[in-house]
Length: 503
Image (cartoon, rainbow, N blue to C red; front, side, top):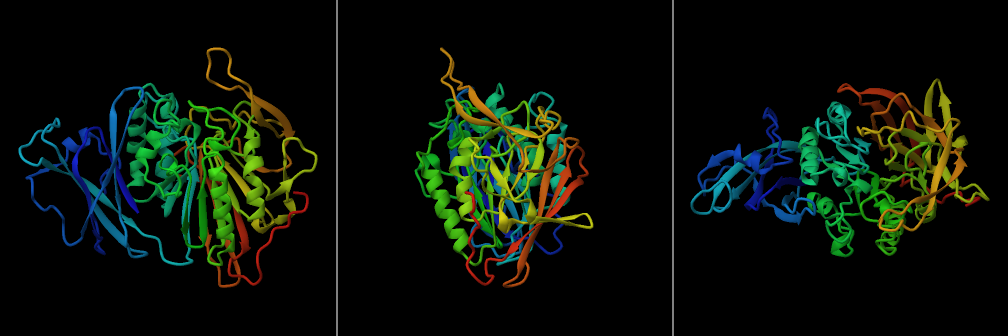
């Protein structure tokens, strides 16, 4: 678990005080996710050297990262406290504090003024294979009146997630739309402030989307993203740290990817196709191979911003690069679920395994027979292929839900042209295909998030994930699509092997 916060000037001794929460904990959570200098000014002013820890607990020093925004030339500081050695299934209370140096706007003699920024509480995951829930969505923005890229639904989604109260949330890219905002740091701070209603109590695990790529912010334009988030290491070069990563909860292995590396389309401020020189795909294969060989892993969930499927008529489209680089690995190692955004609507596929022979766009081959319906209840066997969920419905001001091909079809980005003279952008080359892989779409629900309830089952048996997709147009989430994913557990008899006919 990592507690993070932001300041717009350097501070001294940023730290977190941690202790188990009392059983009758009634403390009111305060916003500790986006502590700017303004927030710090409102903190409790305690004399330097005073111990402010309430009750027993431990002190964890935070590590500070910074970047200089290319637009404003402002240096932004993010502080990350790694909380280790936590007990499973335990409620903890944390408090944030730091000292403002004497040359900062808040002057104080000596070692600086101690500022207490409040805190909150969180619960750790139970140990071993266990039931838990998570949520996901992409393409968010903020509800700020001056933010042209978000809507009021950006905030009601956060409230809806809190009603569901998952263990954690996956954000499938395009978080704050900072790279199209006139003042990128303001977009970032506004987004963190908005999500803190949830993020102060549960992890928000992001993937980088094209709108996180800011020209001039580091070699890849991702310095802001890499500063704000301290994510699991991918054991590669420092400049690639956190851009792809994996983690396990219960019997589920989550693999979070950076789609701009393999996608042909140019939708960011820097064209990043091939930026890892194959490192990410090699890492992905190692991760998937290890996960599928691990008898303690039941499910493999892949997350990337860009989709391999889409029926949007006037947005980005699917991308052949994903189909060429990653879908064969998803087939080979039995990925169960692929979560994406980028297109601003919701749709889901049949299980997909292999490609339809002779299709120049490598059209994924659906396995509709793996889906059964009984008394209206939909059950999908993911051992027959990966189900793709496109959930780019977080609150963007440009929803694609009412701009879908009818009858369903897909435009696939198969390459790019050279930029026009004096331009940087690479125009996309697209080809059309039918959409035999489409199982369902819901154009009447432009704003939504997906919830997942994992049932580990019994040893050697079957495990399931109940998926409920909620309309998030209001703070009271309303379900509109529900289905159940099933597969044998990792400890079931016999090695797993995919049916790869036609791949």
